[in-house]
Image 1 (tube, rainbow, N blue to C red):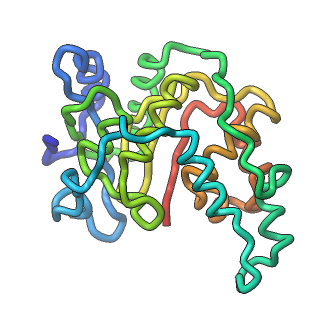
Image 2: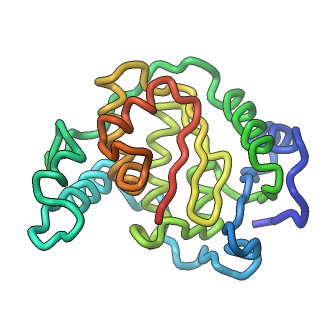
Image 3: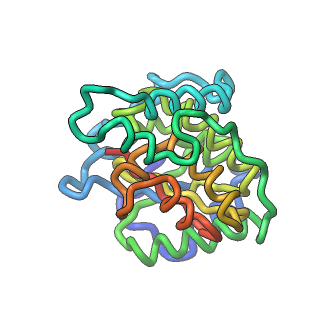
Amino acid sequence: MWLSNDPAPTGLWRLLHAEHQRSGLWPLLLDSYTYDASRPWDDGEIWPNAMSSPAQHDAEPLLAGWWASYTEVDDEDDELSPDQRLAVTAPYGQQWPGSAAPAQQQMAPDRHADHCAEQLLQAQPTVRLGLVAADSGSDALTVAGWQGAVNYVNDTAKLSAVLHTWEDRFGARVIGVGFAELYVSVAAPPSGTAEALHVAAEHFAFCPDNVWQGPSPCTLAAYAERLIGAPTWVFWWD
């Protein structure tokens, strides 16, 4: 991965994104750890050689397995009672509902990604630019060796496999990453409560801290409401 020394200037992500098919380089906006700007990009805290290939993984069983793990009821849990834990993922409880159906695209995915990248630059003007030799933004995370979700998943290729299906089903594009954050533009967000709840289940399996440590109330239903029509998805792993 090539990494800029200075913050990314306005408009550059869009230009490099437009050149991706010719150059083979996917642009990523790169944020750093709040308390140490050298992490993870400058201090070697990335491990590309430790990753498998996204093509080796099937998103559906990955999501189902993570869901089963995160909804498991532990009688010795000192934070939530069994009933409270099941209430977090109501109405599904411990039952994995399966992957959500593709949504209707509301805009061109790549053009929307350009717009969202500019918005991220305006909100976080200190982000730097990375160029990754990858076919897509989902693959770029694995190629770069990003480990922001290592407390849950130590092989980023598994996350990339899920993201690849979101590219197809929701017009998603990976536009940036931080120390433990992931920024994704979404051209086909859920448009209603039932659809959003199904997508929220995938998000919980992918990144449970988005629900467990999100705004109160920390439930799948409350999180789903925030997904309706949302033009970007932001994930954070503790």
